[in-house]
Image (cartoon, rainbow, N blue to C red; front, side, top):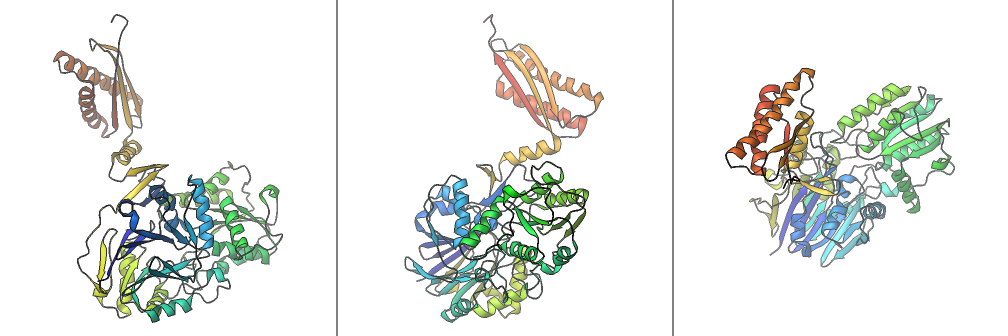
Length: 557
């Protein structure tokens, strides 16, 4: 009896944090290991990653982790996984491997069990046949994965668009292998949903050249453009335009410079000779130069903010500069992107933004998805990678293509689709531990814990700290109370509130001592409750109350 189980630890009903698990009998294959960025209410959180508990509990069954391309939403949580499960085999293409090895080194991971594979490969992991097929994405070396089961292949499309005019093998859409997979039989197709609400094909609307070329034609001063450093397709477009209009290029991002070196060493793309300005040769006084300001996530917006506020050591905007924004906000960075635009309009001479409605992201639109379904001819179809409304829209495309509703699988993270002997079971059980893991620096935070609650309180209602010193033996107050308020009381005539808070603290301690019920922890808790009730009555706020009772031995003792 064959048993295939498919579920997501991230990537369903969300944009980012992609991680999908395919269990073929006893073997586990993991597809992607990404992050997503926190929203504005998750204070101090740097990134959100999947919960790896299930994988740790079943680590001996993991046969491989496939990383289909080099974007953060599918790769950036991999160092965290390898810290939890060292030596797990990772399969990816050469460019992505080079990117990840730098991330691993930065994270202090000395050894990675990484296998470089071709985008159109056939190989075995144990007894399981694996096939890959190249896809056209915004970064080179992207591919989809097909895992053979007894009832046909389970195929994961990864990101893709159908583009017959890439002119670069590292971005090619591998139509031949996709068609060949269909002839061998596809049990289930997992296809992305991010762009599925757009009509037509994504190509040729993914190109930004038609929108920005006129700036190169008519600008006589310096030009700047903001780009995500992982959108290599757009970076190449911009470099080719600079070459066409005889502008030298300065890449203001170390990671992107390294990526372009990787592209050259792998034979994928080489910046025309003499076009790039080395960092040591760049000067803010240079003319006829295009500066590519690159980064990832919110970092790029912070970098522009620093330049606009004249805090950058190398670059300063002039009122004659032309600045093009070609790095649209990704989920979780909208506030930073809006702030960046404000900064630019204050400092630069001419500011323009690429119109996202006319320049599509390189995700599959409706007709791209229809073509993938038509070519693959899967028995079952599972929308992945997207918010819930996008998953449903993707499912509706499958309905339009003739799939029966009971052959389309729409799930949440943690729900399990089980296919026994080629037939989908309708129970959809759940695995434990499929929640977000919030990462603050190098530490993990529980999404349901008190840390974020405390941060939210501090940000909205402030904090009041009340300290007293008491005699350890007699419990007599010998110092204080000292009351400090941050973010709670602003009015100059509110001194009476501070004084009353101190009185409450004293009264609480004295009553407990008089009644012979004094206990340091219990007394602080009682004072906290009394002060909180008083403060909300007087101010309407619920600040964090932090009472401190310090007991010391005096010389008399």
